[in-house]
Image (cartoon, rainbow, N blue to C red; front, side, top):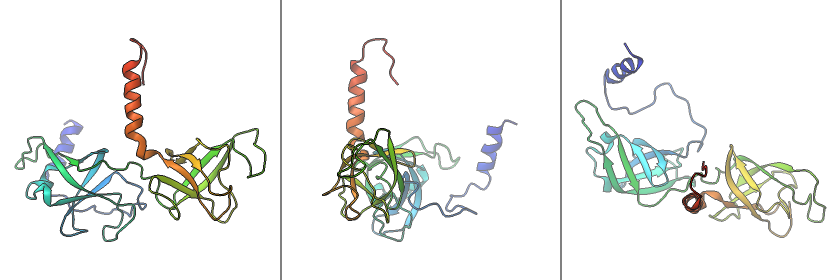
Length: 242
């Protein structure tokens, strides 16, 4: 028997609605920002189904989840770890439109559903507070110091104090270190993902009183994609495009 057929039979055996993970372990907090929680709007924390963010405006879930619950009674939460806590990483949405695919509840066929969010999610989230990131550049080695000859890099930590919503901010705990003049435009890499573009410092470099400010890349994904689409459309015929 083909492997796909075996898996299909295993999935059908006792095809009860999946409500929990058996024998699992706690995930690293906020390490899965694409994970969605479907909740009853009038009862915060009343999780009843999961989902996956597959696009800034769409979550993929199971059709059974909304079979008996009208979409207008559902709140969708992204970025959560503890559903009973009001976490700053959480993003909340209502559902603007539902796209089904001929769900057959009797045979558990086509149990997929696309939910369009009322506004786009903020992808990446700029790194959760405490995330270790890497900044780099050829900027000055101090406010009054010269620029280096070779590329420099620095481990930094994401912080929220004094930060603004459209920035990602970083510090180096217990050290006078950070980005400096000449580092502007350089990257902030968190867990292998570009989260920020070096923007500015306050007063001076590495003051230990103020964080370094990076432009939050996730806020500009639509613009970036639009520019890429325009560039691709204008590319000469036959030109290669990734």
